[in-house]
Image (tube, rainbow, N blue to C red; front, side):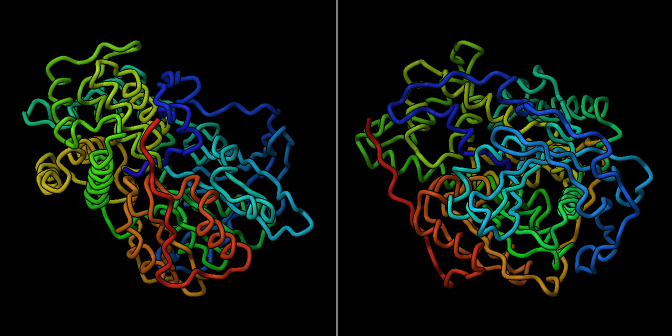
Length: 526
């Protein structure tokens, strides 16, 4: 639904400013987390002890707290970060049912003499690797903040090095990637269920014992276990995309343990899966229409097409439907083309997208295919569905899915079917029932929380900001006027964003109401 694609990692696959296509990443570099270079601490690190009850909260009044000994963490130094393992219960409601290991990474504050505390980072997904993400932190987190905070992240349960889910196989991922993005015939819609039923079956076979315990609420409990293991009374937090939902859950479950939080790319916690997907489909449609509008207004745009790039794109899709493009590594049909467009809308520079479309128009689909492959590989599909399908209520029948799709097509004709059908059929026959956390009254004692939304964010569009801020009760909205998913590199390159986030995290100073940080206008040209 709101997969977080790191802007730093995204640069591997996007077209450069001069339009040179990048090679398609291999599964070993894109689909798998980066291996740790240092030996892992022994399994005894963070040995569970009896649970301590969490403080009362509006949404989780009986949530068990951390089950690790306070201060019991052992860091192993590495070249760019320290590594540790924290052991947590598989099932917080039944701590005796077994444990899982969470791999945690830390980059120490560069100015230890003026260190404020720890800043936990989560890249979203769900299914994004925090171990990989920590090495992209220089781009995402302004240096003035990294000076004052130890940056801490981890592979959430079910991801990468933390008991990672490795389903489905490459063949099924390719089938999902090739699904018709604008199905009109019953058999084209039925293909979604067939593919995603195979995904569910493979995940059940590979990770059946783990699947019931991958709700984001458990990841919030894990985050508090890591805090306790580090011996920190409170933490600060910066969550991107789906990480904003994790931040919301942590804030409402453990309000007294949160010093400050930035929720960057807001997910509305009041919506079910259908509502989230409808909003996201509209976000992708709005972002794509806007970028084509920028292209149509500039003859320097490679996909200008006489000022009518929208018509040219429709013709391109129709042509691919009749005759897919043969490309090294595979073929590009409408499914791969739209998936590639979705991936490139995450970036903040529209030249990548329009150059890829121009290349495809002239018979070269290499960049679209590379982007489509990367989209499905960067956030593991199984890990994504394992959390997204159980966090909120979901459509329970094909008839319900048809209603959601019909309501979405009119507002998002290009992206509505792919977003809605991918999630709805991805979750329809998922073997674990939903475990939604109702959005209750805001918790008492929560500090002001900074919610950042971007005007043309496709995956977490700006209309999620106000409901998230309201659900928290103390939310303060800061708008970024710019392209791409979350603030991305703009948090460091845009002085307005850099100063606002630094003032908030270091001095707890909130931006003035109505503040808008505007990115420079995106250029076209060589």
